[in-house]
Amino acid sequence: MNIARLVVLAIALSAGGVAAYLARGTDNKSQPPAEPVANLPTVEILVAKSDIGLGQAVKPEDLQWQAWPAATANSNLIDRASKAEAINELAGSIARNPFFAGEPIREQKLVKANGSGFMAAILPTGMRALSTEISPETGAGGFILPNDRVDVILSRREKNPDGRGADVIQSDIILSNIRVLAIDQAPKEKEGMNSLVGRTVTLELKPEQAETMARARQSGTLSLALRSITDANAAEGRSEEQTQKRKESVSVVRYGVSSQTTAQK
Image: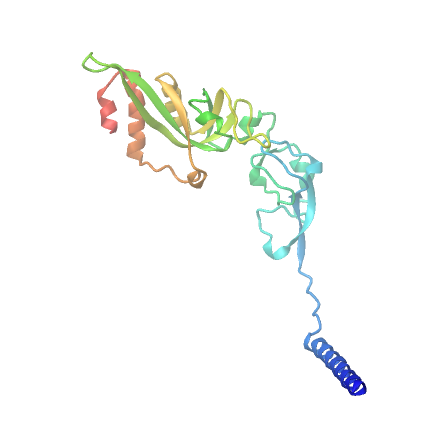
């Protein structure tokens, strides 16, 4: 009886071994041979060798040439074939926008300072930088940071028209979707900070907006309302007619024409 069991066990083991061998051979045959990968044509483009922060002066050691698929290269990239001396030519430029290590360098994001200060170098063409005083109460508790977008609110106290009762407090949004350039002397958020309490904010304004802001500073108290990041790039949701009315409301305080205040509404 024991011999019969041993014979059966030996036959089972032999059959299992043969089946495993046949299965392995089938798997090897089912896998097609690997095809050689075609070598894609490449060009050498200029990239950031390390992180380059906003307002940082670019040094030659911050840049390097790197292979890039020729099919995805475009005129915005700097290729070595056409600009072999680009590293030396761009040295000393100031970064208008930050670059991450390995990111292609685009000349549109750099500006030659030519002896000018940092703020003048990073300001877009046609824009102005104007500073005004803020406090934690008027600056969203310090949670407004450089590159955030804000609305500027003017609050002013006016005497009651009938001469009786308390003064009237009126608030109006005079500027919308304005970019914050700096808080005090900090043009960028300090690493690891989610709030920055300062006494002065510098805003990026159009010339006519700078005039409105200058008048408003003499008319009452200015507050900054932080906009959501989801609509930071949205166009100002007001018509030209409404924009003109905001200007008239500021002129009211300057010239004392109270009728124009109600025209805004």
